[in-house]
Image (cartoon, rainbow, N blue to C red):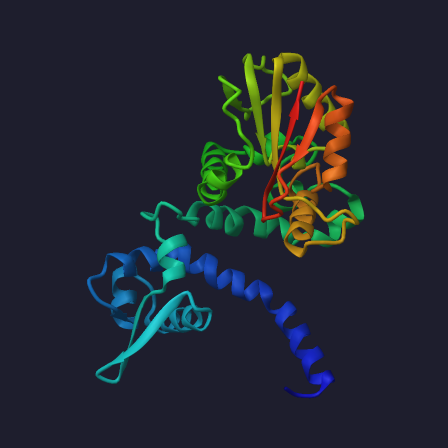
Length: 298
C-alpha cells in the first residue's frame, strides 16, 4: 500500500492531473472515436482508427491507450496488434445514437466550461463569472455570455437535454404530479417574457444560475402566474445542510461561480426562497441523488 507519505503524494498527483483525464475524454468525443467504434463491425486497430478519423497514427494510438486505461475502451490483441472497442460505459453515454448519450454535454464542458475554469482563481478574487476573460463577452450580462452565438445556444440546450435523459424519469416520478393538468417547463428569458398560465411550473437547474435576489424575483413571478392550487417543482443538485458536501455539488457550485451569477444551495436555502415568494407545503424529494426535486404549492 505504500507509506502514508506515498499515499498522500499519490492523491496529490491524482488531483493535479485530473484536467488531463478530462481532456482525454473531451478529445475522444470531439474526434468521434466512440461513434466510429460503435459503427465498426469488429474492434479496430489504431492505424484503422487514425485513417478513418484523419488523425495522426502516433497521436491516435496514445489517445486510444489512455482511453483504455480509463475504461472508456476495451482493448484486445489480434495478430500481435492492439484492437479497440467501446466498453459498456462508452456505448451507453459516449455514442451519439444512444438514448442516454451525454456527448453534447461533454462537448459543452470541453469547449465552454473548461475554458472558464482556467480562470477560477480570478473568479474567486472577483466573485463573478469569467466569460469576459475566456471569451471576451460582458461578464455582467449572463444571457449574452451563455448565448453568445446561435451555435453556443444550441449546444447548451442540447447539453441540458442530455442530463435530463439520464435523470429526468426518476425526478419526475419523485412526486405524484397527476393533480397538475397543465405543466410548464420554464426556460428562456423568464425575467421579462410573460409566463404562460399553468398548474405546475418546472424550474430544472435554473435557480442555481442566479443570485438570491434574482431567484426571489423569478419565484415571485411564478407564484403570481401560477393557478390556485398549483405549484412549482424545483430540480437542483443539493448541498448537504452544512454546505460542505457532497463533492460533486460543491464543484457544481464553483462552476456556478465561473459561469453564472449563482451557486448551489442546501434544501433549507431553497425552502426559504420558496416560502418568501408565497409558496407553502414545501416537500423534499429526499432521493439525494446527483439531482433532487423540491415541490411547493401555491
